Amino acid sequence: MSTATQTDLNRITGDYTVDPAHTQIGFQARHAMVTKVRGQFKDFEGTFHLDPSNPESSSATVTIQAKSIDTGNADRDTHLRSNDFFAMDEYPEIKFVSTSAERIDDDSFKLNGELSIKGVTRPVSIDFEYNGVETDPWGNTRVGFEGSTEVNRKDWGVNWNAALDSGGVLVSDKVKLEFDVSATKNA
Image (cartoon, rainbow, N blue to C red):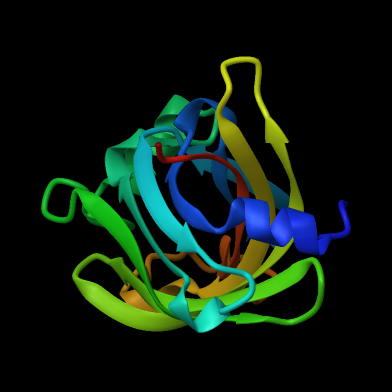
């Protein structure tokens, strides 16, 4: 990870658009209590205002097309799109809108906001690490951040499960959300 210098911080202050070709919004959950299943959303857009010197003025909005879920298994993806999980026909978008931001140290930030899934909006906090700033070959200022948080899917009404003989369940309630973000500064 990069250590943010004052020059970096001054350089990255501004408005950004998330680059979906170089960003991953993923998740992982336990399956049958013995392994982790990972997936991602492939269709999303996001914008943010970044001001590391005055974090409370920073903000972010991300909209995900729920049907773009991809776990690498077509049958599982169809089940996740169904009413058992995300009810994607009725709730086609998953949305995050920030409510506040705070700088923890040189490279760490906490983004607080409202996550909406299946018509339910609940608060979440996402810890982010600053990965650096660079000018790409096309002259764009590009920043990178990695972040994650853990949520209980039942808080958003994503309740389906199946009991196992051992007393466990097929799908864990806790889901880790992971973000590897590349964004370009708006002109």
